[in-house]
Image (tube, rainbow, N blue to C red; front, side, top):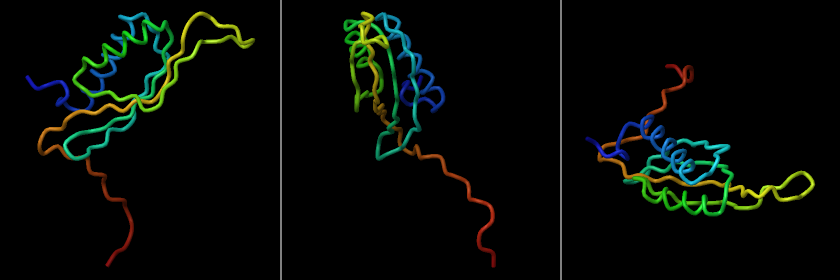
Length: 126
């Protein structure tokens, strides 16, 4: 069987999102937003951006970070924040909000190329 990081893109993305949800649930976090970006193929690896917002405890956040490091992708937090969730009056609700942008990297098999965009209709004719 092929390594999960080498599976077709849709299957990889579904597996990645499922792994994030499982890690969050296992550590008591509620994911409010998990939005993947487009994957870009680079030399020998692919990079995909991912935006996330989750709510829970500090222990839940640290547990989820540890669980994500066990995946077959390399996950790099690029910009993130961890702050108490507050009401409109500024009172803490006792939960933390963890949100940010992450870069997800995976190795690419030899010969994997980016999908080509089709030519636009129209243009110059001879």
